[in-house]
Image (cartoon, rainbow, N blue to C red; front, top):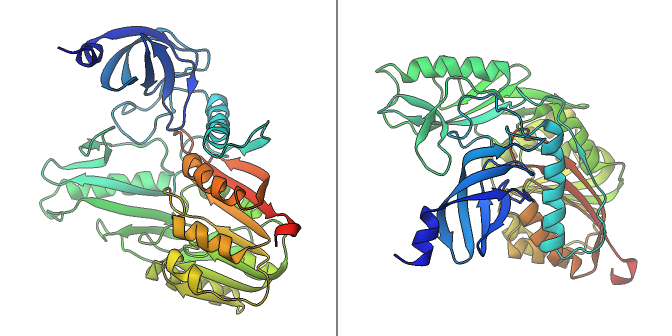
Length: 400
């Protein structure tokens, strides 16, 4: 048995130094850098090394010898098994601090931003029962409904989810009843669900719920969408998120990339003479047009095309005042960043749900003369390590 195999069978007593991007705890022992799941900074724990890659070990907690001052008892009975939440072991204040440090770590380590970073985070009004959108996994043969087991594609059967808003918890219970009947679809793998101000949309339709259009009021805007079109999960924070991203900017031209159903498009259209909204999902752009029409806004061109394909084709004889992008968790592709750089917008607003890919993309933008003016985080995902970040960038007038 080689040394790697030996280490993977051993247990170690370690102290958790801090939390890293991805939400894992950091510790060092015997020449190994350990990444430890479900830890709290300051924990003294006994861990089992599950696997080793070079000088990095991935470990799980066997025993908490001395809990961190910020460790609390997770209230969810599925915590540790369900892959949905990984911060329930922390006080809410510690969760917020960890998320700011995760953003700061990525910006220093990946984007090479030196010096102190002023990053504020807006807490969620609700630490629990905030989630207004979810994807439930289904194991039809075993009659299971819930979320994936941590680190696997098995389904964790969940009867109660502490982060769902009450109407979605009620929906979960009704869908569970149908899953447990012989009439449920035999090849069903997952279910998309979202709550609006006026009801529930479910895809596929079942348990009396349809894939219907619902609406949500955010600030002064009304948005139409359904379960098959992406919409943010924490509706309590949407108004301040939009206000931060759009701000008080006005001007001639604004571009909204990865616009979804138009969360930022509508407020941009009220502040700029011309807006171009780009989104590859046909259903989403159908809702953007619906939302613009309902708002009486006629100054926006909606483009249904892959963002990376559209950017090289766009030509403008006027400078772009603001370019806003809200890409998926994987960040912007290289061709998207190249296209943005080619357009040379005066200001860029980057809305991100992943600090690592955000930092990667910021590094490329900063390399051509953009500078970071402001960073603000929003805790859209309490009880998890995920965090939403809004970054404002501008380019030196000498480089325009």
